[in-house]
Amino acid sequence: MTNHGGSALAGRPRLLAGPLRSGVTLALVGILYVATVGLAGGNPYYMLILSLSCINVMCAVSLNLINGCTGLFSIGHAGFLAVGAYVAACLTKYFAVPLIFALPVGGLFAALVGVLVGLPTLRLRGDYLAIATLGFGEIIRVIIVNISTLKVGGVVMDIGGPRGLMAVPHAASFAWAFLGAAVTIKFAVNFINSSHGRACLAIREDEVAAEAMGVNTTFYKVAVFAIGAFFAGCAGGLYAHLYCFVHPDSASFLRAVDYVVMIVIGGLGSTTGAALAAVSLTVLSEALRKVVALRMVTYSLLLVVVMLARPQGLLGARELTLDGMYGAARTAWRYLVRAARWAGAGRASAGRGASSAREANGARGASAEGGDGGGDAGD
Image (cartoon, rainbow, N blue to C red; front, side, top):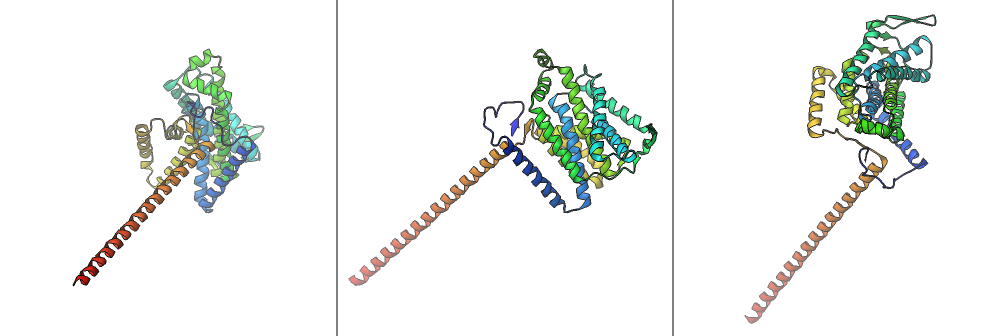
């Protein structure tokens, strides 16, 4: 595992590099996809939950760029998802735009909203920024609730208002959601490891010092809002075409809190941690569907336990990497070999002890027989 905040792996040669590393990564992603589909066994319910997990991975990882890597505190991510969902759904339903084009367009609209959110909140930090983004998310929800129809280019679109947008084409599948999650994670990892990502990390650690060193804090704060909103908008488009329905509650406060909980439990600043937490909490939420009242209680208890046991999250600021997994596998193999040698040495020692005991017993038996024979001869 690697740590963005330290230099534990500085100067350490990488296990794989260049095209070989990319090939191994693609192979592992392909194996993961095939294994996931195989475990689901073609069950529609399981495939739907897996697809929702991938969508939540996209939202959690993109929010992690804002909250974890740049140090901002946004609770309005659900609003970006709703914008992307409505835009993409309207494009496919009323303008017959293919999904592959509707998703990025919905993401761009969400990114534009992200810029509009980022610009006026530049001077806010911490709780004040959280309240501002929460207000923007609620504004988006209220606007959607109060729009029943919308006319664009002579086409009257039934947005649905409070009842939601229905009859969205079923154009998405688990393959689409899995691809979206993989692309989001890949982009986030590359961004964090780039010079732009390092600038965002510098802003997170000390904004004043970063600005003194020449980092354009205004540009990066707005840019990271736009990037996070873009991927959330794409996730919203997938959500709309997976469930064939979009509701204003997509921008609700509780959904936004879900994404914050995912990145906190996974570890702020950890891309793979956010992804693992998103999948785990999605599955847990579905497992508790029969007892909905316990869902938020479980989330609260989970947060309390994590904060007490792992204040930095499950992975902290670390990442699961090929080099880290290879090193862990080598360490585990060395321990297994060592344990096997100890077990073998123990069995050999026990065998030698048993052999010595048999020899000693044989010698005592022979001595006893010799003594009996001598006594008989004397008689």
